Structures are given as C-alpha cells and as structure tokens.
Length: 393
Image 1 (cartoon, rainbow, N blue to C red):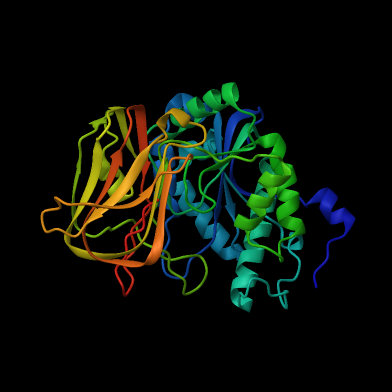
Image 2 (cartoon, rainbow, N blue to C red):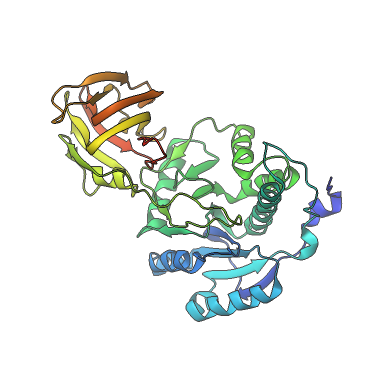
C-alpha cells in the first residue's frame, strides 16, 4: 500500500505554473477549479465563460480563479494553456485567472490500491487521484485569499454569483459560526470555506485518499470542525451542465427533465422565484405571506407511479422560510378534485414518502395548514427509470 513520508507532508512540492499571473496581494475569494481531460467531451471553457462573464470588474479585482490541470500529460497541458490564452488573455494578464499543475513527484503510485465501498479498481484509482488533486489545489490556494470556493469544471454560474456569495458570507458571519457554506446542493460543487481551514481539509484528503471518496471525507471534516448544521444558500448559483464524467465511460444525469406537468400555486410568489424554477431544476420557489390552505400543485400530463417523494423547505440558515406546518396529499382523479393524505412536514420543514409506490397519481399537492411569513420550496431532479418515479427534494 502507498505511504507518505513526513517530508512529503511538510513540503507538498511546488506547483508548476502553466499560464497566468499569481497576484501579490491577498484577495477576498479564490475559486478552485480542477479540470481533467474527458474522453468524450469538454466543458471547462463554457464554465470559464460563465465565471468571467457573470463577474463585475470590481469582483474580478478581489477574486482569483485557480485552474488546476490534473491531467498529467505535458503536451495536453501546453495545448490547454494556449486555448486559455486565446479565450482569456486579459484575465490571465491581470491575475483573475491562472493555471497550475502538480509535479509528477507529488503523486504516489495509484496501482494496486485497496478496494473499499465495493468499488472496482478503475473507480478506486479515479476517486483516489481526485482526492490528491483536490488536496494539492487547496493546499496551494490557502494563502491567496480570505475565502475558498470549490467548483467542478462542468457548471454554469448564474449572473452576479460573486455578489450573492459575498452577501451570504456577510449574513452568515453575523449569525453563525460556520466551517462550510453551500451554493449548490450537488456533489463537490459550490462549497465555500475559510481559507485558514482548507489546509486541514487538504491534509485529510491526502491522508485518506485511498480509503474514502471526497464526499465522505468532506462530511467527516465538518464533524471534526464541529459544524452540525448545513448552511445552504437559498438559490442554486451553479448549474451542473456536464453529461460525460471524467471517469471513463461514466455518464452523469442530464439537467433536470421532469415529466410533463401543469404547475400551479395559490401562494404569492416573491420576484422571479417561481414554481417553474423548482420543477425545471433551475432554482427554488420563494413565496411570501402564505395563508392557511394555500397550496402548491403539480398535475401530471398522464398518470404516474410515484415511489419516492422528498420535499424540503427553507434551510437551517433561513429558518423563517421553513414550512412550519404543512401536509402532502395526492389525487388519482382525472381533474384532481379529491385528495388523499400522505404525510405531514416535520419540524425541519421536510416531508418524506418512500414506499412500494402509488399507482395512477394525477396530482401532488403541498398544502399549508397555518399562516407563515415566507416559504421556500426545493425540488431535486425527477428521474424516470423503468418504473417512472417522482422524487422531490
């Protein structure tokens, strides 16, 4: 089994700068963007275009995007650097973007690794190298800014994402002691830390790179840092766009494509936070001045078999937006006039249903049983396996 010496832990080797200028002064935010060549597709430049295009000039002066090129092929690195220079010459020159890679000596042997969690050799090797890549990127980035944000190379940033991140940080600094803030509910996307903490996380990822995937180590890190709650921004700031994974022959779910349905609510919608945002996977629904008996209804175009429903409202950091009292119902009527009770929302504002399945469901309805000031609804993607299902989150 691979081992590390104390010298390797202390020094971590020097990063190889491929292109761009490293800024001399400490900034507000570093965005860590690891990228690996995919055999079937490339998304990194679309990701960069959204990060650059949706940043103000003021934001750019205090933010650094560190692209970590984890592919170890030197020829590919040169080609990649030329492409970045072609697309973003100004951003490379002023330090908003720079590209690095780790020296080959940083990596231990990734052959004959211990198999855990029932994963095959290829997946164990892939996730182990991913841990090592993330560790190097975090270790390198910890001195660059006050905060660090981890992204993946196949996401699209929403407009004013940096302004919204800044506002949420200031809000949470006034309310809670936190280790990690989340700006996406997906994987290792949009996770933000104090830069003074990411050296510890990097050490954990590198120490246990073979034993556990990064998502599991992240949860362990939060426990070690005594963060017991999840602090999730009310709006998704990064939309996952990639279909092909960096793991060969592996695909990921496409952007949400839920079954055709008619959406309606009696609640007063706040600004542009509509029910359609939720159902299409683009964000959340935000309502205000919710009255007893107000409803959210999804009427399917054809009867569905529903096997699992998970509804989440509000968040730990936005407790006023939690559904304090609501019920979930379903209808099999053609016109959805008669409903049957399914479950009640718990104290955290969540409702969960998972049984053998409801047949011929025409409508799902979420009904408030008391008046609340605000109401925040999240729905995760709806998958359609062989037996069609609806999954709310």
